[in-house]
Each structure stands twice: as structure tokens, then as C-alpha cells.
Image 1 (cartoon, rainbow, N blue to C red):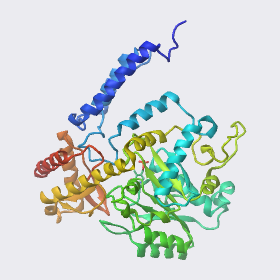
Image 2 (cartoon, rainbow, N blue to C red):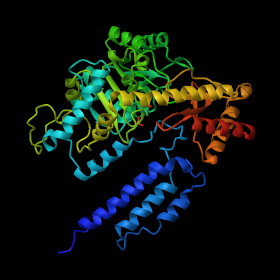
Image 3 (cartoon, rainbow, N blue to C red):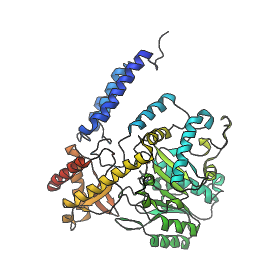
Image 4 (tube, protein in one colour):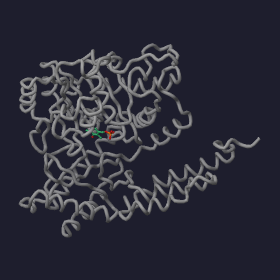
Length: 478
Ligand SMILES: *Cc1c(COP(=O)(O)O)cnc(C)c1O
């Protein structure tokens, strides 16, 4: 009998796996010397490389493996490069890569506890470990998500279910007043999408001003916004505080916001997609003061915890709120022996990948202290970068944030906003074209700035020097 099409024989599997191991090693060993990205990539060039895949004749596994490696190597941005100062995407830790290989091989289904008690219990352990680290009560529970965006959706869903039990069956039309949620003007854009997705509409997201470039939500402005909502007949049900804005890494005043939420009986969701893992560091944890007042929290393992994408986490203070938002009881799913542990009744997903294993294996091998050191190292490199940039004539505008530096050229302060934005784009493009570093441009509090975030645990002083040098050259060309 011939081998099944999808399963090469044992000898061939070993050959393929050995080669795959070599290729993975080539990524970890070689990536720091590759260009971060080939700035000349075009849609046409990638499509041309893919053109021979018409799937008419089967190809040999070895050939496809080599070809795909070349595609990923030559036609992508290397977020694992120590010179990638990017959009929070980490260099993956090695154990996380192994974890994903195992997950793919076992293909465990985490929808229901009975399909893989080991996997569900590993995720339970992690969720409770982090909930406890954040200072949430013993009843806290949560689930893994595809990322911070989905975790924020869980947060809004739970807050709605808590406040409006009638919503589950009757929908928004059962409500007398328009529910609104409040978040800072620098909060993540996933909230706009979520407001639309849950049927509230984007106008239901009320943006509260921040106190400045280096400070988070203004509590006085929050009070004023709440008062305005009430005056206008709107019904605030949720405040989303951000712990580490995407633009500038700024953490909202969590305690002050938490106190408002307690006084007003509002759900507090903390979007700590970036900043949440600081909780593991004795040195940095204080920046999250007040997060223990949260009713729910988002954090991403695929950012500061350096696990491969995609790995977000949602935790909330009471497991019953998850049931209120997500529970149902379909006929075809057998009951689990461990009552109340079925993920499909506690989250939006049914088929569920074993997202938690890469975090489990990373944390188990690094230990909390090792993980904390890794995070501190990135934060220290961010601090160091800020010092080097200031010494080279740039002005850092976002204060001392965890690993993230927003900066501008003070000589251009008198230029129009649009012109400054154009020049910063030109600078970023020049740096990226050099191949040694990758940075970007953003607007924080309406102001165009250059943005560099230390997202790799491999970034060292020499990498920072290379970036500063590239920026110096780029400035003269802008
Ligand atoms: C990254 C981020 C998100 C979105 O997370 P994804 O994992 O990209 O879906 C949400 N909020 C903040 C503050 C973030 O930094």
C-alpha cells in the first residue's frame, strides 16, 4: 500500500524534520545579519515568485520546504532582527517555536476540557498565574485569544453582559438608553472596530483627552466626559484604560480611573496589551499601580513576553461574567467531567488552538526572574536609546516609557505639521532602505513623531548605535 498523500513515510519525515530544524536554526543564527527588510519588494515581485504554484502537479516536500523558506527569508520584514524597532512584534523565544511545532503535531482541540485536559489545565494555570500577579481576586478567570484585539472584544462583551443582562436575548433594542464606553484619545483602534462589531456603533466610543505627550488619560477630562454623557441621556457602562499606548507606550493613571469606576459603578477594562507583562518585574511592576482594581485585563504574550504570534490573553475578575457573556449548550458536545471548564462556554471561539503552550514552555524555561530580566533588558535599551538620541540632537517627547521612544527634530518645530510629518516619513524610509534598522512614524496627541520600540530581547548597544548613525545620515537627506 502506498503512503497516504499527506503523510510521508518515517524516513522521509525524519529527513524533512532535520532539514526544517536546520532552516529554523538558520533563522536564529542568520537573521541578525540579514537586512531587516528588502525595501525593493513589490507585489509584482512576490506574485511572480508564486506564479508557478498552480497545484496541477504535486511537488516534492523537500522542494516546497526550501522554496517557502526562501520566500519568507527574502520577501518579508524580519521582526526577529535586533534592529527592528517596530510595532511590538517580538523576536520569538526559541521554546515558543518548539511549542508551536508540538501543537501543530498533536492538534489538540481546546474547545472542551474533555478533548484535552492537559492543554486546558495548562492554560488554566497560566490564566490564574497572571490573574494573581495582577492582583485580581481568586474567582478570576479568562481565556487565550488571537491577540489584544480579540481580548478587548472579550472585555467589551463581558462589560455589556454584566450591565445589561437583557441584551443576550433581546439585543440592543431592549435598552432605553444608548450605552457608551470611554477610553483615551490615544487608546487602541481595535476599540473602534469593537464598538461597530457589537452593534453599539463607533459613535458610542467616547474619546477622553490625555494630559500631554508623556501622560495618560486626564481624570478631570474623564469626569467632564461622564457628566456630558449623563446630561445627553447616554448610558456609560465601561471605561477602558490603556497600560502602554500603541503610539507612545504611555500608561493611563490606573488608580485614579479605577476609583472613578468604583464610584460610578462602571466596569474597568485595562488594555495592557503592551504593558501588562511589566507585572513580572519587581523593578517595573510599580508602573502598573492600580491595575488590581481592574474588572478585566487584556495582555499580549506575543509582545513583551516574546512568544510567537498569535497569543493574547483576557482575564476578568469573576468567571461567572464569562458565562454571562458566552455560555450556551449545544446538543452535540459531550459534557466535561470538569464542570465549568469548557472554553467554548467561556469565550467566543469554538475550535480553539493551543495558544497557551508557547507561553507555558517559554515561562517554564525562563522562570519568572528570567522573563523579568528579558523585559527589563528591553526597557533598559529603550532608555539607552532615548539618551543616545538626545545626545545626537533629537528631542524625546514621550518621557520615560517602557522600551518605546518617540522623538522629533527640534530644529523643525516651526514647520507646519504636514511638513514635519512628511520629513519624518522620509527619514524613516531612508533608515529602512539602509537595511540595518527599521523604525516608523506615528502621530501621538496629533503630533507627527518618529517611533522606535525595542521589541527584541536581542537588541544591544551596537544595534542602537547603528540606528542613531542611520538617523543622523537620514536627517541630512530629509
Ligand atoms: C497591540 C495592541 C492591541 C492589539 O493587539 P493585537 O494583538 O495586535 O490584536 C490592543 N491594544 C494595545 C494597547 C496594543 O498595544
